[in-house]
Image 1: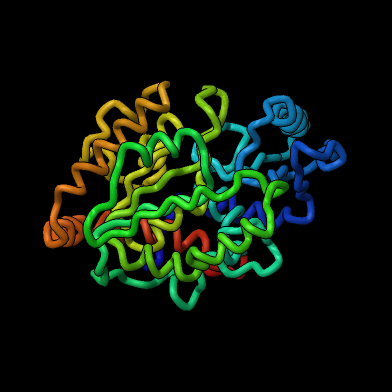
Image 2: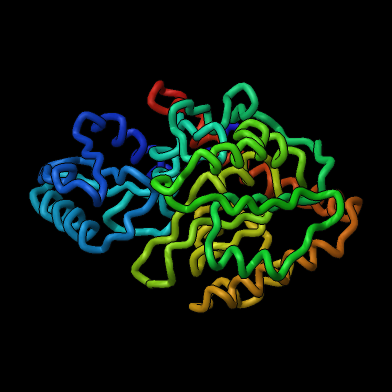
Length: 319
């Protein structure tokens, strides 16, 4: 359904399209990419900029531009608020509207596919219960904390439980890795798996527990909102609070996350995430279905917010 955003969100998105010709795309790997001192928008080329030196260079440029009486913003895929950055919901639109996803779990970007095909994820769609799986946890890359997580959980009945442990660095990808990648679902097949599942256990990107590092939002979290799941999120400190602050609902608190969200200890947060997993594991499919139906309004709102940001052509006047 069409979602009505606060006026400032619409104004920021309008500013983005009116000033797209004054946009600087930058990364921390190329100094030439952030030489411009007079851009209306500095858009980070990936999701969040964890290089504090580069980020501070950009923020200094923005402060100087604003001192001259002009508007300028940073844009990254973060849910952490900042006076120098677009609102998190604006950033979701800027970074994920029309985004192309790699077709499989390999590092290949040659054949990008629509992240959320518009014919399936219409922003005016009303959700109805269509699930035949109780839950999904599907994790691609191997990391130490993910090894720790999967050492503590086991598959649930009638659920999808997957840890590919795929090679972390694209430079290390071998022919054997590419063959191995064929054993796993394509992106479109993964979309169907999420669509069929009631609960989604999301392992969001982890960038360390430095308080200065922003909390990012990636396709991992968007997947759960766009497929009408009940998401349980594992991510940076305060990820649950920050999502709720911008109107998106996740169910960590209801299933045993307790004080995990504000803990500085990542392994402690993993332990609390495991609590959620095991508590849901103790539920039957019918209990899970009834829980989905009793929370349908929140699930629909999640879908409305995200689908209106990633599949709605705001710049054609459809706001």
